[in-house]
Image (cartoon, rainbow, N blue to C red; front, side, top):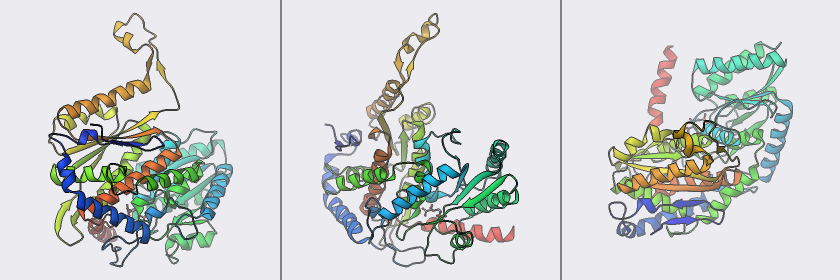
Length: 473
Ligand code: PA5
């Protein structure tokens, strides 16, 4: 029996291949009913009050969870109509006046914005010339080769236009993270020293409450715009907040549509019934797969090059949110699944062997876009080559779909757990739906597993060690 939930927009979650004999059974879902009801109630509580059970900030203080408020606009919400106006004006002015924009961020302050960029363009950058400023992302690593490469690009662009107007946009809630700070300092120093060739200015995305924080102080000194990362919005839940929206604004994306998609998804995910609430259904199946079927790995596999970055964004969301030693009662549970980003069809020639015949410790999550704007028909210019005859008249989108369906069928034939998200097309609205659906699914799963989905105590350990090491350098 089909176990697919389709929303009026055409977005669907299909859990059919997760269920049945040798997979997750109806009885298992039935037994979980009280816990599912509890999880639904807990997420409603987060929506209403911003309170998530036992959640504390890394300083040990109670901290609200407000990402479910991001789709809504209002004076008491993190996103306001005024902010959207300000972002629109900012984006227009940047596209008119700047030759280059360099975003410097890492983790939650990078991954979501990069997805928006990839979807608005392609996974390749910089942006084609003649379509607004060239856009670069840096500060997502401390990679000197990469920074030098960007510097060379800037030098090449300055050959044609001098001074080249460069906008630096550090995105960092804390304002002190090593990778974006390194990139920001490097490029600001370099570009301002070469004032014969470059005209540099900045805009900052950071926590405005950290008034004495470095980015706020620098922005005040130079009178740069500051976009606030609001209270209660953690990095991996921030794509629908300023860290993502600023990138979208520069790209000229329709931000109200992005938020409308998220809002419609939120409305569609209100029920406590797994057969009508797609995020709750998704979370429940993944939870049972992890807790009772040994699924310690989740492969996120969009069939689209420009959604490769979405896989990387989801890796952070899943890993930091659910990878927890202890549950919220302090009991050791070692919960979570290791996320793996893959792309179809590319990784059918690399990872699929492992998905199909490796340990039964995986769930493969497919993502498919039903209709692409561009239609591409293959022709065979070599009629004498009989091996190519079958390609004549082949529609590339049909080939992609056939490949994904074949992968689904092959996995299912051996009771390998897999599920499918489908978007009718890729645009701001459907992206907003998808982002929000995934964040909400993780939130529900956090409740089912009773782990704090909003902290990341594990990353503090290496940070302390790294700080000491850096002092000695
Ligand atoms: O999810 C998180 O909190 C992290 O990945 C952060 O987003 C990342 O470390 C960047 O932090 P910041 O925005 O403070 O520079």
